View (cartoon, rainbow, N blue to C red):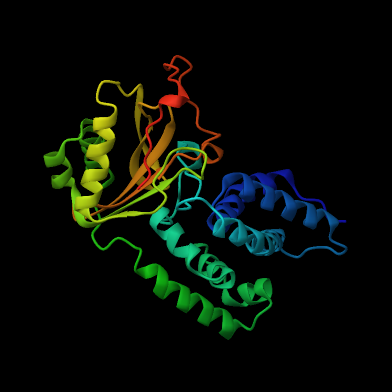
Length: 300
């Protein structure tokens, strides 16, 4: 049985985890997929010409198998499903696959998703993709092309610098916490959408909140419910390549908020409150311990 060089594992693992994360949307699931690929390598009956290619193939195939059950789970998911946020600088996103694009990927078939990620994001040759997906190269090209058309609509049309995006994110935090209607109107695009993922375990909107008027009322209403209770924690952050922040609300619930910004306006807001997706979040131990029963409802 072939043995992997520890140096090769160390070098290949981050890329493999990024691939699996973009296929599955969860860091723990991605790490499990990579571990399974390593085990498959060690169980291989013959020598492997290219360990890197073998591992990429194996990770993709494990992810395709996992997606079959994952899609069934997401059909029963309470409220909007969002990928697990990456907010640790050590796990920085090295490409432009953001929350917006991850949601676009969710609308693709598993094969389209794999073909697009391998070809457009990770630069894998079509012949190798064909071997991975057990399809002809021409079929893989069509899969990637169809996926590209869907994903293109999710890419930002107007780039905003990270510095300016951070300023807008902070202004949004201040305005939303204060229920500042005028401040919100200056920041939100007319077709802005809020996605709030509580997973049925934390209060969250069960449907996307669409349109600037409804989003404004949404945040003004939240601010009014807890106007006398200060927010105990706020930290600016890059979340899946987007400007945003980590916070603990007046209800004592931790969450990440990522903002998609185009032409100086916020076009999408991604709030992750599901504790299962925030297990790697490390907050100061000295935070006030609010009673969970005081959590305001965000239901529509």
